[in-house]
Length: 454
Figure 1 (cartoon, rainbow, N blue to C red):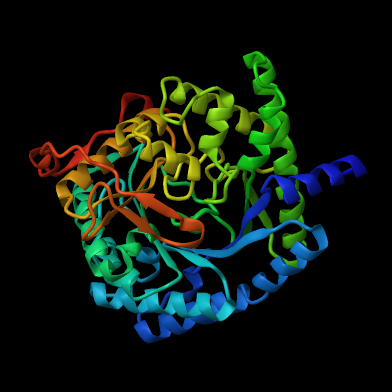
Figure 2: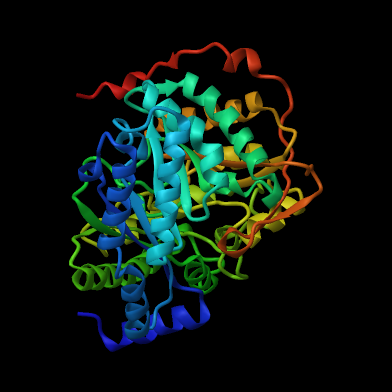
C-alpha cells in the first residue's frame, strides 16, 4: 500500500521537481494485418491501430486527473513495418504508403508519436528491408507522427557494415528531404545496436516479435527529482550518494508502476514493462547534466563525467528494479543534447564534445542522441560515427543508438530550434578526417567472442 507520506512526497515531486510519466505506449502487433494486396494491408493496419488505441489518449487524461501526475506523451509502437509489408510492397514507394497510413492512424487516435517504421538488419538485409530503409527519407518528410528505427548490429551477430554504410546515406538524404524544417526528419530516425523489443521511448520504439498482440509499456522520468534529492547530501561520501539515488529511483518507479497498472486495467490491455530511464526535457532543472553537476562536476564533460554517469545509471537500475515486477526497455539515463539544457550549456561552454559524448555512451542508457552537426558532413563520416557507436554496444552487450541531425545550411556556431520536447541545439563540430575507405569495405564485422554463450 502507498501511505499518506508517499502521496505528499509524490505531490511535491510533481509540483516542484518536474516529475512526470514521460509516456504510456501501447505496443500493437500487426502480423494479423498482413495481406498481399497493398490497399487491403493499409486498410487493415489503419483499422487495427484505431481500434486498439482508440481510448489511449482519453485514458491517459483520466489518469492524469485522478493521480495528479502529468503524462507527457501517449504513444503507439507497432511491429517492424519491413516485416509487415513483405508480401505487398515491391518498392520503396509502396512502403511510403504504409508510413502515411500509420500517420493517419496516429492523427485519428490523437497520439504524439507512432514508432515501428523499422527494419532489423543486424546480420543481413532482405530486399524488403532495403526497400523500407530507402523509403525513410520520403516517409519522414511526408509524415508528422511516424518514427523510424533500423537495428544494424547486435552482440550475437556483429555489425552489418553494408547497412551502416547505407544508413549514413539515409541520414543525409533525410536531412535534405526535410531541410525546410531544419532537417527535422532525422529527429525521428535512430540507428540501433541491440535494440530492445519493449522500448516505449521514441524514436526507437517498436513492438517486438516476441510480444503479445497488444501491451502497455510505461516510461517514467525524473531527473529533477534526483537532482533535488542529491542537493540534500552535498559533500557526503559515495555510499550516501548511491543510497540517495537508489531510494529516489525507487520512488519514481513506484509512480510509474501505479500508472501502468491503472492504464492496463482501464484499457483492458496487459501490462508489459516500466522503463525507468531518466529522460530530460529542455525545462530548467529537468536535466541529467544537472545531476552530474550536483554529483560534483563543474560542467558535464569535465574529467570524471563518465564515472559519474556510470554511477548514476547503475544506481537508477538498482533502485528502480525493486519498485516494479517488470523493468525493461532501456532503463538508465538518457543524454540527448538538444533535450537537456545542462548538456546544451556544456556544449556552448566547450566542456562537452562529440568525442566525450561517445565515451559517456559506454555507460549510459542509449547513445549519441539528438546531436546537431554541420549539414555539409559527409554520409561516410556519419556512417563512421554510427559504426563506432554500434561497436560500443556490441562489445559491451548493451543497447546503443545514434540520432544525428546534419542540419542542411547550418554550421558550427549556429543553433537549430526543434521545438517542444525536442528542444534546441548548437551545431557541434565533427572530426573531418576521412573514413570512407573503412566504410566502403562492405560485409559484416564479426560478433565478439563473448557472444557465443548458447
